[in-house]
Length: 274
Image (cartoon, rainbow, N blue to C red; front, side, top):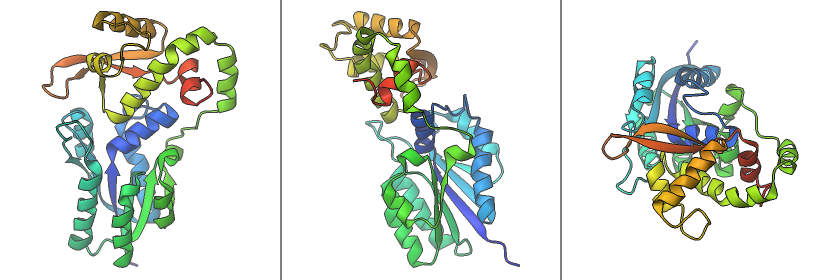
């Protein structure tokens, strides 16, 4: 009996950010790299035998993640450098790689695209024309409907990792226990940081203060005053500090991220607080 071969193409940042934004699970703090890769491999083996899996990301930022991926049999970390403006370029790079794979590996008829962006629709259509079976595996709340309509089957990665979506009824109950003045004070900051986390692999504290905490929002006019506001948010548990390599020169810098387990953060991001 012939064994069906399966190839996977994984947009690492798309998956990583989706798990964090929608399920408050961090790779690799809450979900280890090994657990994530095992989940991908198990999905592939439901279809056939995993031939190879290509994981695309800017590994200059996440070097340790790349090393662990490279140590895992059948998985390869593919470097995609960000643009000079720090824009992620995974979508076009992965699209080209899938097209090349179609031509170079005619023996592999099953392709799993692990991303939720509609940018992959065209390569899926090209695959259908040459009789490839195209599947999608991604974080379900951020998966484009167009992808679902083109896929033979859809595999929500969060289900394989035991993650559950936030319950907005419970969040509303938690919200009722919060001070309205505190909600009004912190809502803009939380939403701004949420936007920054979606755009950037790591949010450097000084960059966030300069670029996102504009005068007039009530966080102070000077850099020092706005930095004090962030320190107060950290003391309240709304945000967390960490140390990461600077994306330009590698020197250690302080980064910030939302504490998405905090009731106020959950309520604001769920849209129950205005």
